[in-house]
Amino acid sequence: MAVKYKHKCTKCNQNYVTVTSRQRFIICYDCQKKELEGEITDPAMKKLFTIPEKYYEENTFLRSIKISYLRFEKLSEKQIEMFAKVVQKMNQESK
Image 1 (cartoon, rainbow, N blue to C red):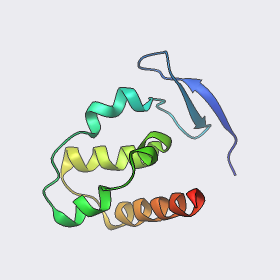
Image 2: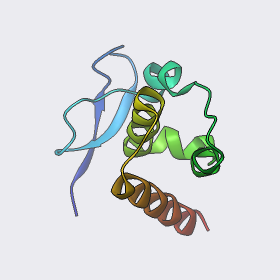
Image 3: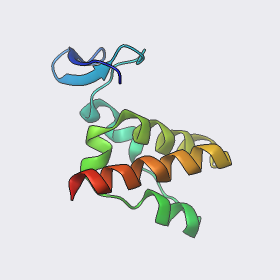
């Protein structure tokens, strides 16, 4: 398990973000919020990305996958599988 620590956002330099040593780009949720907004027309993807806002705030991986989909309008099967796996894990932890 990776060690987690708090680091200031590299974009706004105000908010602290919980990160691991593996993360290169440390950006807070507030700075990425505009990138997460967009129209998703595919019903399957719309269902996939309809998760609580709290999950996007806590997990940078979920944010990056959604931003990638909004940018390129497609995801690989591995990306979809891992997104669903992380969401399922977060659902279990919240219960």
